[in-house]
Each structure stands twice: as C-alpha cells, then as structure tokens.
Image 1 (tube, rainbow, N blue to C red):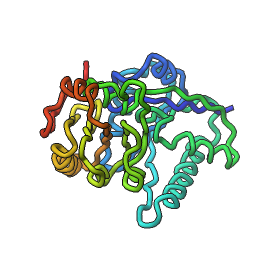
Image 2 (spheres, helix red, strand yellow):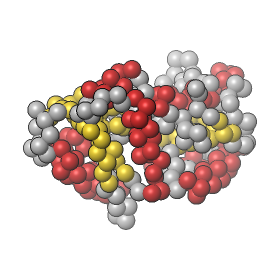
Image 3 (cartoon, rainbow, N blue to C red):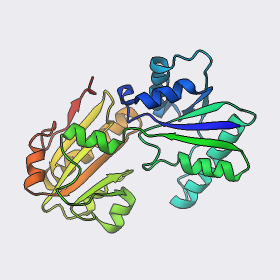
Image 4 (cartoon, one colour):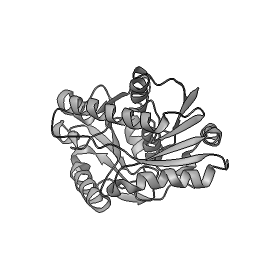
Length: 270
C-alpha cells in the first residue's frame, strides 16, 4: 500500500531539519516538490537544497509539479475549498499506481496553519488508499520568538494563535496574540496603546527581517518594510506577536535583535 509521509521542514533554513525528518526523507521512495511559479521560486529552491544536502538514498526519486493556483476573485472559504480539491486531484494523478512511500515537504509544521493534512483527507475520501505519517517541524512562531529572544507568553498567561483575517474582525485576544497569514497588516486596526509588536519576515532565510517595539512607534515601519520586501522578492511570509506591554515583556524586548523603529536584517543561525 502507498504510504505518505508529511515532513515539516522548518521555515527557510535547512538547519531546521530534525534528525527524524532527515530519516523520513531518506526512507522515501518518492519526494514531491511543488512549484508555485517564478515569483515563489525560492520555496521550491529551499526544498531542492534540502534534498541535495540531506538525501543520501540513491533510489529516491524526486518529482516536481506545478501547484494549482487559488482563485481569489470570489469568497475566501469557497475559493480555498476549490483550490484544495484541485491540489488533491493533482496528488491523485501523481500518486496513482505508487506503492512505496511518498514524501511531502511542508513549510514549518504540518499542524499549524497548513492544509496538507486536510488535502490528504480529500484524497482519502476520493478513494485513494494510503497510510499516513506526520513528522513535526519547527514553526514560524518558534523562530520568531527565538530571533527576538523572547518567550511567547507572560507568566501564567495564555497565547492566542489567529490569522490576520480574524484579527481584523475580532481584535487581539488576551495578553498575547500570535498572528499568521496577515496580508493586510491587520494590526493597523487595533488600538496601539500599551501594545508591543514583534514582527518577522522570511524567518530563517538569508533575507530575514525583524522589527520590534511599541506598536504605535513601529507599526508604520513594518507596513513599509513589508511592502518593500514583497515588491523586491515577489512574495513574503511573515508573522508577528502582539502583547500587552508589561515588566516581563519590556525586559525581554530589551534583548531583541531589532532596533525599535527600524528593520534589521539578520543571517540565519549557523
């Protein structure tokens, strides 16, 4: 029977690959690498670099394919559902007749705001028989906190993880809110009084950008840096943490790698 292993590969630095992930990669008979167009060629390049560095099994085949493009002209949820169905159909075409183990290399961790596992549910519902294994990876939130040298939470306080779309409609939740998938800088719509932000883009990559400080002071700098980086690279992946300013948060912020109000560009840790 076909086996599918979903491998979390971290957020942009091949050093994020765990020992378990490297072992799963080398145990695969087939590795699928999605191409998302020239503008997002870096994403395929990273997967190729991981295979070149860690794949030592000469029997493993690497197959590249063009990822279907999501139609953004209609409603968000309906567009995502159609897109997922198209990806599932592409996987079915690629995996039909396979009996070994196929590896899917997922940015970050497969459990956190990634739809690969849901797409595999569609694949199974469509009649393709396979077993499933998931290898966890380093998430963007872990790298964000590490780069700014801060803990995610205040002592005894929860952390809410949400999206920019939800932040725009419901605001921040609790004392600490981690925000992902925010293409519109939704933090501009909340009251900045007493709020600190820790933002990072291209986390783990050579063109990593970090900005932190009081939201009222650095919000505009983040918007400008994000627009500039997206224009220069053709794509952007970013995430940020909003937290109520307090003694523990202020102490941690003093150790951040960023200078409040100005973007800092840092190299991935060696």
